Amino acid sequence: MATATESSSPTPSFPETRTLWISDRLSEGEAGLILANGHVMSSYLQPLVTYCRALGLHTSIRGDPQEIVQGFFATRLSNTEYLKSWLGSGLRLRQWLRNGLHHFVHELRRDDAGQANATDSLDEIASTTKRSEDEFERAWALSALEQAMKETIANLERRGKRAEWDIFWMHHVDGHAYSVIAERHQMTAAQAAQRSFAVAGQVRNALYGILRKDGALTSEIGVEVAAMMEVLHEHGS
Image (cartoon, rainbow, N blue to C red; front, side):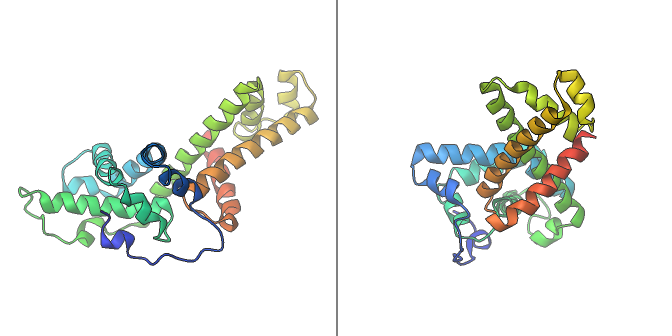
């Protein structure tokens, strides 16, 4: 069961549904829970590992960051109430999981009789630094972008339009002019621009879906997607 800190917030009255996808999955029973858990593990494993390492949470229990996060998932997601508690927390899913990881590490310290400092306060080992939060957010953005790109590429390949991804990447990430791209792909610069714009729209739509699963309001998504597309540009340069 989730800890009091993780689930004590009252259920807010949102003007729109923030958590529809996961809520729908949880209503589908065991099969839906497996899908929801799979999404959580694939989307948040690496960001949480990055956060655990940046903040030094693993040093207090002398563990490997990836194994710690996997253990956190195993204990929390095996409980059907864990994600249900998040639905009423008012937190973004990544914030809920980040808080949960702190509690999990605290539990490991408390339960480890061999740790001389097992009774130290959580604040002593888990006071959040700006740098570690920034690293977590960047890792999460890159994870979300990777998912969105895979989804877009798969969609293009199903439609026999894989080359359009290359056009998008050459312009938005590698920084090539449309005239150069057009010559390589034997089309006009206007055609290259049109195809690149269409793919960028597909990536944004995929990111919208990912952000909704994280609990974002529609009013928040546009700004976040713009920031994440900037991360994509920086990552490719």
